Every structure is written in structure tokens, then in C-alpha cells.
Image 1 (cartoon, rainbow, N blue to C red):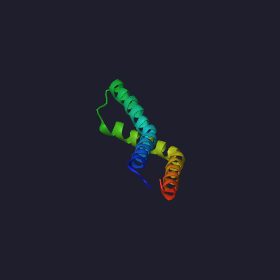
Image 2: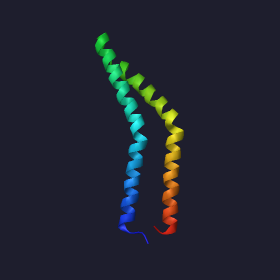
Image 3: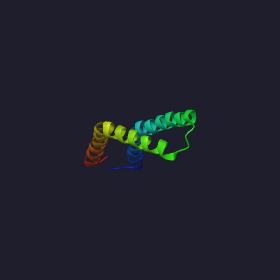
Image 4: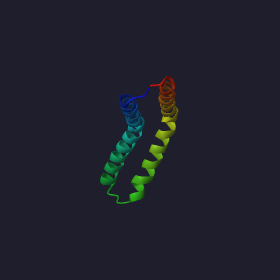
Length: 89
């Protein structure tokens, strides 16, 4: 029988997984934004597209590179959750 502690444990694990999966992409966007901001400051550019387009490209490439790892983490979590539910908690 599933109790409230079981639900809390799996909810905590789901939140941890969300953090682990989003952290590399967010870090990539942060570093790219800082580097492009410094370049804009040094070159005295005020063009918004100069920062947004390269950041979107870099984040897109990062997601494509990390996608196999992200999917394997997600599938592993899902399999563990379904196995735990089928055993009754």
C-alpha cells in the first residue's frame, strides 16, 4: 500500500531530476549570456538580436547534445516509478 511518505519520496526525486536535467541547459544559457554581454560592452553594441540569436543557437546545440543523456535519465526514473507502483509502494 502506498502511503504519504512514498508519495513525498517520489515527488522529491522528480523535483531532483527536473533540477539535474535543467541545470546544464540553464548554465549554458547563463555563460553564453555573460560572454555575449561582455562582447556587447566591449564593442559598444546595443543590438538585442546580437545577444538573443547566438544564445538560442548555443542552447539549442546544448539541448541536442544532452538529449540522449536527458532521455536516459527520464526513462530510468519512469521505469523505477512504474516498478515501485507495481510492487505496491
